[in-house]
Length: 188
Image (cartoon, rainbow, N blue to C red; front, side, top):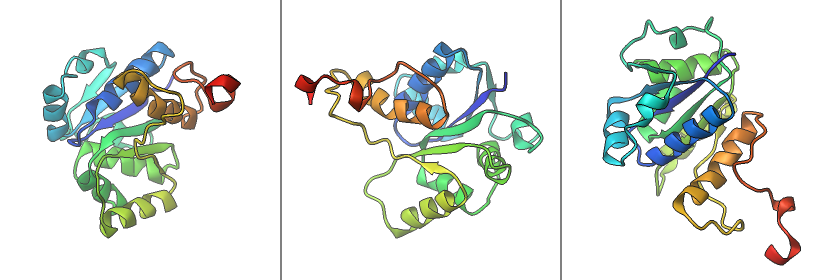
């Protein structure tokens, strides 16, 4: 089975990447990671460094000879969670000077799924323009804005309201979060 590619940048929110990796693994998927240097630092700082051992493969961001840098390498989709505005800008303008940016560029040119969870607030016009460019190219821009109508009780529950949408956009059936219609009338 073809893997999913999970990119991690230096934006805060490593919990999104870690929980997504776990959800994908629970669904039987193979997951390959590529991290920026700042992504590795934030992963460790936010307490999720162990996820490197949970992935099926971890690529060095400077390894532009890695399979995921080529359009001939097949995968089921790429998710960048979290995505810094610097990396988002590089991808929007075709600057593939790192493996993460190149792999995202390849996903776009090959018309594969690319889901980006940008982590920045507030944003200015350049951030919005870069996201619009990527959306026009076929990427799904999914700011990690959690849903509260499911009444999450933990941070993990809150994060999972976002990740359920990511899994939906990957076309995966999952039990990660209830849907609106699954709620009882007394809960609405």
